[in-house]
Length: 315
Image (cartoon, rainbow, N blue to C red):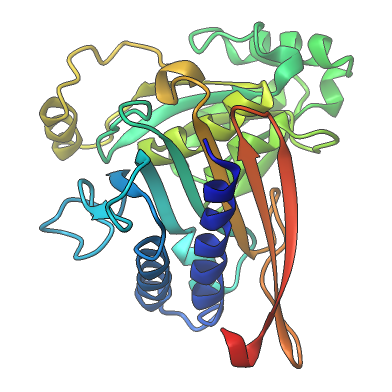
């Protein structure tokens, strides 16, 4: 993928992050999300490319903008698939909690899994443990093998998961083997990527989270050399309908990062809204707004961290 296009996406996530950050702590997650969506869509339509949203804000009849199937860009080549989340962690922004980002994953046509809007069971690790994991293995085995691969004592291993009632048994199992649990209220894109980053204090992501976030995270994890395994785990009856409509017949299939994001024509771009395990958040200073972003390119394998100072009168 052209490096200039990858950098164009940074401008998009920066704009969305700044718009969302203005709603931090105001208790209105819909307004925060709406501001991010408006900004992201507007900026995407200024870019010389032809993008199709394969994972977005929902179906066309549910989301007026950045809906699944929407075309964005100026309609020129290259043609690309996009998985977007203008504001991952709307609740975190509304309540001023930890961890929120604006994110775009992009790939050549038909490279990103067109995941239905449901849930998946997930297991993510970094490069050292990528060939040691099995989604069906007992929790204790996964932790022991990861610890050995990382050269760590089991008591040093940190397992991150969403703070949900459905994870009560998983939390018990992790603690029973002697590892530590790290809970987040939202945002398992950043949480899944964290184990693949050097010097991260997160070693494993486990648990059930949204399927869209699995595809977003897989794009970065694959480029970084880590691994994510995922399997559809519908939580209510309507989810089964979504999966069926997407043409997925085998609910037992385990998807790897390569299944979720194919090939090397991939990029992952994110800008922090509120500080989290991946990025610092938007900083409103006297004369400028400072954003912190990352760009990961599949072809080159490069990871760029970009700090941008935006002057108020030019935004």
